[in-house]
Amino acid sequence: MVKEDTTRVKDYLTKTKLTTLDYIINPYVGCPNKCLYCYAAYMSSFSKHKEEWGEFLDVKHTRKRINTFKIKDKKVMISTVTDPYNAYEEKYGITRMIMEQLVKSEAYLSVVTKNKLVLRDIDLFKKMKHIEIAISISFLDEKVKKKLEPYSSSIEERLETLKILKQNGIKSVVFISPIIPQITDFKNIIEKTKDYADEYWFDKLNLRSSFKTKMFKFINEEYPIYKSLYNDIYNMKNPQYFDELNIEIEKYCRENNIVYKNFYAGT
Ligand code: SF4
Image 1 (spheres, rainbow, N blue to C red):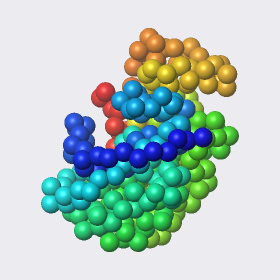
Image 2 (image 1 turned 90 degrees about the horizontal axis):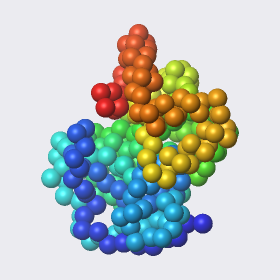
Image 3 (image 1 turned 180 degrees about the vertical axis):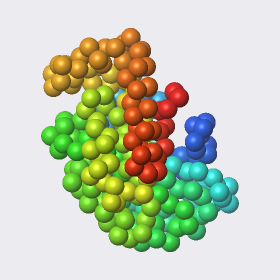
Image 4 (image 1 turned 120 degrees about the horizontal axis):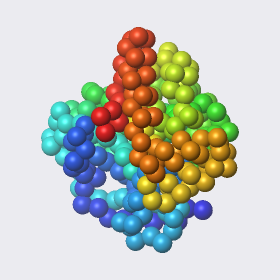
């Protein structure tokens, strides 16, 4: 059960300090996808809500139109702490309204989603100058998906979404994020998607606060064999696992001519 509300904002555009981006747009506060590992859960403390992260959704409204002149040639991501095509977007259409304002923009737009609803806006994407759609996939197993990402499109639907984007000539990205130690098999995901993806992005699972407890519980119950590895990575802060994986990703992508960005490398 998600508590729906509205909130007034000054502007949909937010300047970001993230080094790879200039602006971000989050059409909603909260994310009903409710991924178990959600890094954005810390946002709860900035909101008025008593509900847990994933159980509230504020629909953002503003009278101010997006200043497309300001974002000319800038990198803009939609979104970073919500899914712009979450199940409620069908009802509210805020992302669609934002996309309509961005149609003539000359910004470099990146959309990140786990939901097939993104296909609804293909007509707008086709008119945009620079647009890429990133579909997040961390595993191919639907049973794992149901446990970790219960309210987003199935893996099969995401694969189909990639195919349709490709057929429509829209640049598509598979965002292998978060990489969940020993559960994410990046080579398998690439093998399964390489005919439909123009690029791959990688980022690792970061665990802090309440979602760290949830993920540890999940690992203890479902994959007790990896308990000590998770302890090593997330309590002892041993960087070895991700350092080695980084080398493996680089080698694999180089040997297979895969265009990629690894957002966690060097962090
Ligand atoms: S889609 Fe992203 S923001 Fe939404 S719950 Fe999942 S991890 Fe969090």
